Image 1 (cartoon, rainbow, N blue to C red):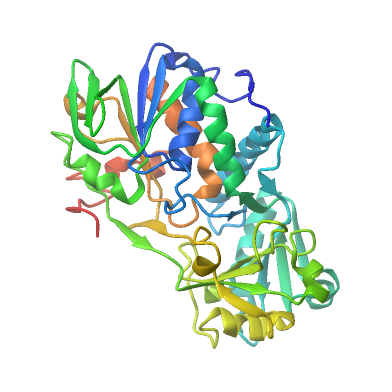
Image 2: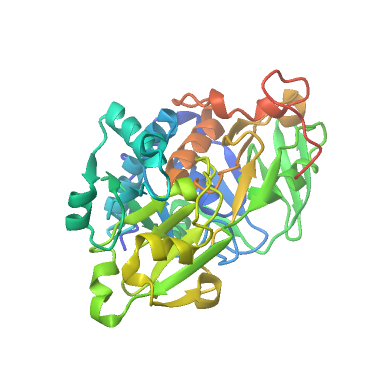
Length: 417
């Protein structure tokens, strides 16, 4: 693994404002680690505080695989996913190891399941890819059967520059690289008090106190608890937990196993009925991972598919007789859980309120079950905010201020819902 990353290509060299700043990041998941990565080259110090440990299998940003795709109904999310992918590719190149598995992402449609094909997620998201001129392929029935015979469907719409992230590899890379960039980890450390004074921040913890100029909170569902520690910060975010209703590995017969690995099978989804799946990742996962959930970026339609078994029986007949095992039982680390937001948008930017109370504090939370793929972009944005209190990206849509008291674009909630 290459660890002597130069700073000339990591997207932070222009952030001259970070030089001389002490940055503290609370939350050591992938968003916090990516923020540390981009902020570190020009900051005086970067400290990451986590109540558990970096790479804890119990955290939301861990697992074995996470989808990386561009196929959203909303063009802005597609554009940002494309931007994030370029950052992923840069990280991968300089790490000298595979972080992304580019097997594509296939959205399925079967008329007997969802009769209104034109209204399907597959067709509508493909239109967004088409408008943005991103690599894509339409595979009507015969072409789908020839290209991906694992599926029994009437059509597939392929997001070509897509696949999944090797989460363990990403975590290990960041964990090994960040100390060399001057980042200090404070693990298994509880934050007990947060005080602002003299244009800086002091955090009382279960260990030594931490002083910094800039505070970044990337603590997932623990965010509101931290905001309660800040005098003068009245905003709370409408966050709620969620996770798939089912997540199972389907273990193919050894005779056909090669048809279901990442070399032959793309990431796949039928979001209209709440299904997503990942191929068997050779040497890493025991089978094809299929989940059944309420997708945050699609409206589920009535159908006969009520489980992963129903989906397999209808759309992947080659796995009907496969051995199955619950993902949590198989690995304990490849499950997913999400921090949903009341208005279904990311929360990213400065904490709203009087500068004397919250100046120099920034937050990133509410990734809606789809955020992992955006991690390097989120980290770069938060690093820019930490350094200059601004960013080259338009993040007005994601402003935390929409939940401030009296906001015209959001409402205040009293805590996590």
